[in-house]
Picture (tube, chains in turn purple, red):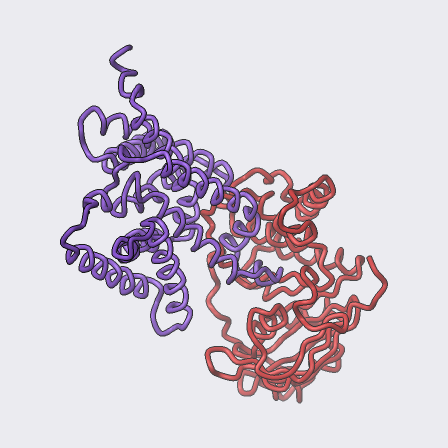
Length: 270
Length: 260
């Protein structure tokens, strides 16, 4: 038992676990909309689009998180703009913008000779390097996103399920969609530290996809998704500490195993 | 319910769909509590008219006024049931959840449904004969049942004006009856109903007013006035055959029937 609880005695481990759990819950809740609205590609794109933001922030000596947020917001709204113009399908718009952003980011980062932050940490997370300040920021922004999601639960439900009804009821659908995109951007930025840019998309999709298999209503899908997200983060982090592997991958693999188990169980029932 | 007349006024509107003008210079007025059948050949612009009335399509020209105010002033005045519901049938919602969405605007965004909302939803479900399906997922329903869910939602919205785009096309007899029952109930409540249909018999027998449309208004008035040879000729063109005996045959090729 002693051996089992040993990792938790370290402060950095405790911080990592708290940050990871928060991110797990956050991604899972926003992930509900990502899965239901077919925004998986978009979620992945936003994550990659962060790179130039981080690079510029580093060069300017500013806060990396803010740089990431601005980049994500720009790409999110840019995708909305391009696809609304009609000439380019949303899918294509996403592909173009995210590849450009990623390339720009990598180009910038690789050209900085004295880059102190490890590129692999940006790509795959460095949850064991979470400081107290980082933790406060994660929780603060996380609660902000969750509050907005709860507050706008009903309008988001209507625009997601039945856009025609939304128009009939005169809901500001465009505005609501943009708010959702910004929340998604914020979620991805907050996830930077625990799972990194490369795997944030997985945390958006996998827990929610699992919940989709076993729930009947949106609210319960969110709750189940959040629980799976939190659980995967806890277990994944623990494993990453024990086996000394990158935190992001351990968390995502845990979430994937859970998905596979649920999927098999469901098929077995039939 | 207020006593102001629920008037719908369409003033000289033109509506385009994908850059083509589908409706041109359409004007008509609908008095409080009227029941109107909109008929016309395929491509006449019936669906386009409904979409314009709900604000889904912009007007190239003209005005639409409800209770004397332009569209957008009324958040839940108009209920609209499109021909084919383009919703994700695997979305995690129950029948009750969908009908409750009809109560959305009366409560505002942030208040959860109250007792009155639940009562109205319950009543709407009962009136459409699907109360026993309240807790079922919409993915478990048959086509006819799905149609009734959206009818129940329109009822729960307590609209002043109800628009239905071809509710009788491609549905089973029970659902057709349920829809006609709904229309009778709405008439009692003085709700204005505007329904498009290909069923000219139905239009002639169950509706006091008929609007014959083909890009613009061919005729508007009682079924007797409207469904006359000269009007039908103008609207249906060569699809209409007049026999020596005086009877008329319309051969209209209907669009393919959707799954639900």
